[in-house]
Amino acid sequence: MANNMAQRHKATTRIWHWLNAIALTVLLMSGLMIFNAHPRLYWGEYGSREDRAWLEIDDTRTTGFVKIGSTTLETTGVLGLSLGADDKVRRVAFPGWATIPTRYNLGAARRWHFAFAWLFALGLTGFMAASLLNGHIRRHLHIRRTEWAPKQIWRDIKNHARLRFDAHNAGTYNILQKFSYVGVIFILLPLMIFTGLAMSPAMNAALPWLHDIFAGRQSARSIHFICAALLSIFVLLHLVMVFLSGPINGIRSMITGKVPQTPDSNPTGVTS
Image (cartoon, rainbow, N blue to C red; front, side, top):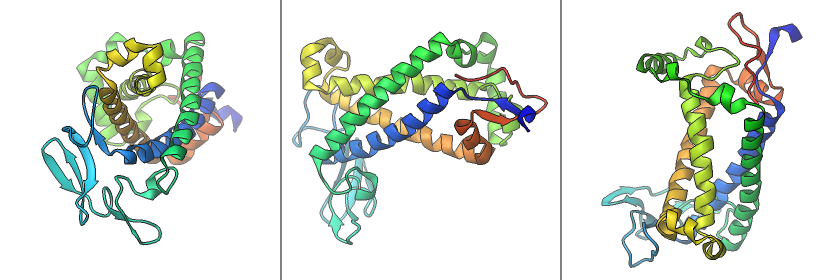
């Protein structure tokens, strides 16, 4: 059986994957509780109830709603106004099942958020350093000139639409995977870290240029929220693709690092 297995992920990738899964889950849920304290987003330096928000999740005491710009959507029962586990009406942006802690507690949410933010940031830094040293980025995430061809990209889109995941080698990433992983690892995740730092008064004093890069604390908060939403979408799509392409092999590869070897597999295409 061992001869029929191809190496897919090294230990560094597997450890970082599961640490990220835990850290991002806690960060998202505690972040939603923090957002509940002031469920409005602005651009610029300042924001208050009297200022115009580009996004707002609130209620009218009888209905919950999400307002984006001038568009308002009723979200009663889900966002803005919903029933808690005790069947009592909760007038908060996100319901208790989606937050840490489940009951409103801004102080506890901040402690959870900051603790796991360090775990997340240090894990990302370690993964990037290891990927540079062992050549993972150069070998597996570098998008080669031939892969930029519209014909190549369109072929991968069609393969995904037809659920033909066996069209790719077990030890390599296709162009859509490279686009998504590079975008998440090198754009979204660093943005999450730096916008989080830009919202800190202590960091504003130590690194004022960081605050200026994002054109104000409220702009940094908005970008932080948008990145969190995009990461949530990425995780959902990732889980769907794992399920459609074979959840047993997908989960096994991220636990043991190996996948069944096919005639087209590339055993040397190991991801770090």
